[in-house]
Amino acid sequence: MQHFNTLNDLILFAYSESEMSNTDDFHKVIESDGELFREYKSILKLKNYLHKLKAGPSEYVINNLLNYSKALSVKKSVMAGNISLLMN
Image 1 (cartoon, rainbow, N blue to C red):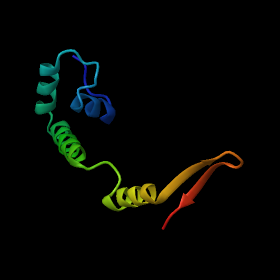
Image 2: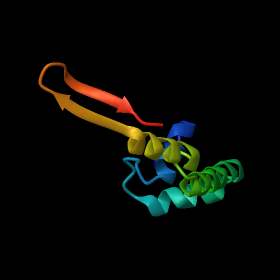
Image 3: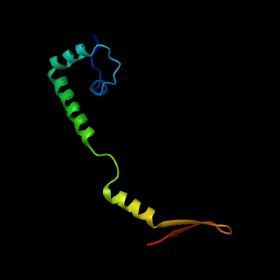
Image 4: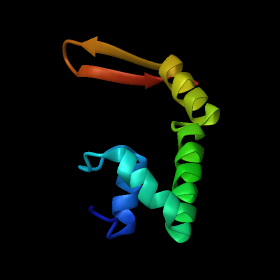
């Protein structure tokens, strides 16, 4: 039976991205080793926490972009090409 050699192996297993074929055996290995079990539980807790984090721009940034978009006016000119006007 293969064992977890590194913390990366344990993280990959927690994210179901490891190449380990028999997950039931590896769950037994984790549960039988107290330190490994604590590490695995910590990884799962962190995984759940990261999943709940909001990834993206803040409302402040979104509002600034929308306001800039509303204030920007681009006009085509035959002589000068595109003219950008920022109307504040």
